[in-house]
Image (cartoon, rainbow, N blue to C red; front, side):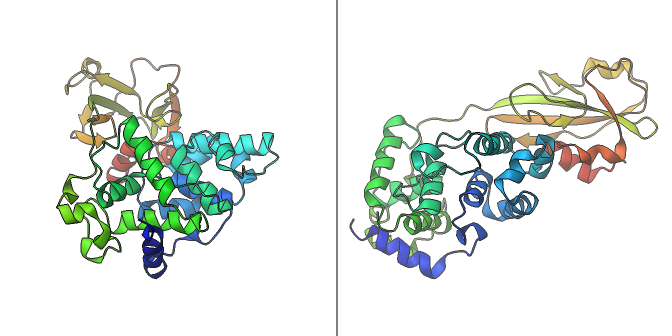
Length: 337
């Protein structure tokens, strides 16, 4: 399809969203935006991008900042490993590369937390390198336009779609091409597509064959496990306890109220030892591989045993610590200060 790039870039020039990271070729800002927008909608990511570029205007500012401050600024965005990887890579660039951001795809992809898509985006947007991006939007668009039944979550599919994207990119205009294909995939060729205004409708095989809603194909289903969390909120003379999650996994290095996990949605036996407590309703929190059912137990009796990893704080200081979104949401609804 020789005119593929021409069609999408022509549409893009007339319809693109004016986003701040599109008005710069600063690789640091582009990198920030791409990491923030992983697993995040543009509307939500915008406020975090503006916050980070204000609080950390250069990669040196990000590198020298304390990780807890960065996690605090990231709070509510989820997938906190992204923030930790940002900090790690910023320190690597400052300490090992004299603060000079890597300038080629092959170097950018070595950064922690950067995969093929992110490396291609940064290389093309910041340095105009001819590297085709393939994200969820691009998978969906290409699978429909070319009516490809190969599962996008298979090794064969990833190679097939990347090869196709590489063939279609305009080597003389890679940055705009990549922006265009992502924007058409996001704005028009969405899970509920608006085919009537798509610049590729007349070329789209799935539209002609009426297989739009059968594309893209996925072969695997994500296994989701159920978790039952019980958070203990002690309310003793304006004081409470928190602990830091140090193990690898969800919410690493974030803070939480003391936690007990049960196999089923039942009250933990430890609550029977407390004279006075009240319990919240069950709150459901969905992650990519887990469904968390959480309850918050407000306890006015002193702890029977204070664990060595617990930190005693004033109630009003809880927001000084980076918290998982489920706790932050609960505190927004229930003021414990």
